[in-house]
Image 1: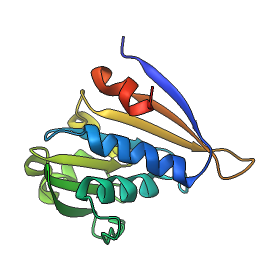
Image 2: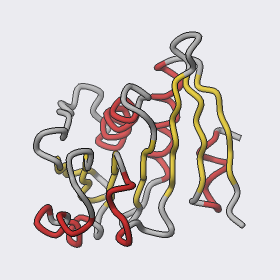
Image 3: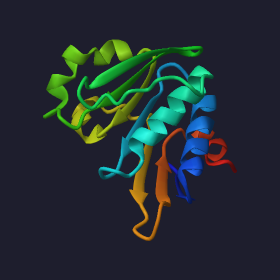
Length: 153
């Protein structure tokens, strides 16, 4: 059974630090699936991940909410940031270049829309805001051999 880690991310800086650790551990062919309600920090994680992976803190990282996918050329290979909120299901992914994107790194917000296309070896990151403040609760599953390093343990 895959290991699951629970982390408390007290602020945006902690979310960004988690994203930077993920960027240091990512490999071509990896998928990061981000779950959580609107405002949970999925886009903030993706923005910090892409900036860290590009080694460019000023990298412009627009939300793919309307374009559905944004592509990036990173030192470790191509990356694609998908926002599938407006998709009905996996049938609509083909025209977004899903198969080609899987050769590189993919970050997917709203991965429930992937259906049978969800990579079984993906890192799953569920974020939930803490109602008492700016903290987030994070649940991480996948990347078993890299999970402890990702959690900063």
